[in-house]
Length: 278
Image (cartoon, rainbow, N blue to C red; front, top):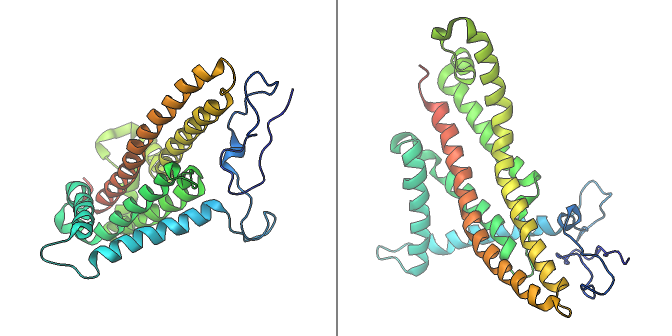
């Protein structure tokens, strides 16, 4: 049986043989971990430092987000134009709908730039999944969500110690409540590990897992559409292609939702750090 080939071309996203169809004697080239690996564009994989497709997309995404807001607000007008209106709507949605609602206006105002930046950066990284030629969500590589979650984690921990002091921070992290009586030591141990170890991990994995799964499904139906284009399989290819369209529309929703959930949890962590312990 003919084995599917994995392309070494870093621009090849769908990593499968273009001449492989059903009834041709070759197996279905299912997507796998190889679909998330890219050869370096600059340097070699064995080098300590190299530059690949996901890094390029992250860089371009940062430039796009910064460029969009710079173009929208470099000459702000009392009566905004279309670009400024869109930028203001997005900024105001995160400021009022996420930051103010979670942290409060007085405490939350200083964190609005951070939360807005996180939301639009993550959203852009997710959107690359459906952009032609790019077709890959950067956040489906675990290192990117981990770094973002680490930034939030450091902010959360430092704010907790700054607001409550050393003893107060420990009470905050461990959920200290003397009314628990004999189960207090067990409760504090569980809360400590949950807050300081599990929480940042789940914060990153939630974003990563959703984008990884979504991209895998898109790949699955896209490759299947091509693979079935042969003989009677053409009828099934049409159904598979409809699923590509459906999954693309669904991914548009999930991409925005996951960016929203990430910043909502970020604000929840900040609010917990600032709240008085009872």
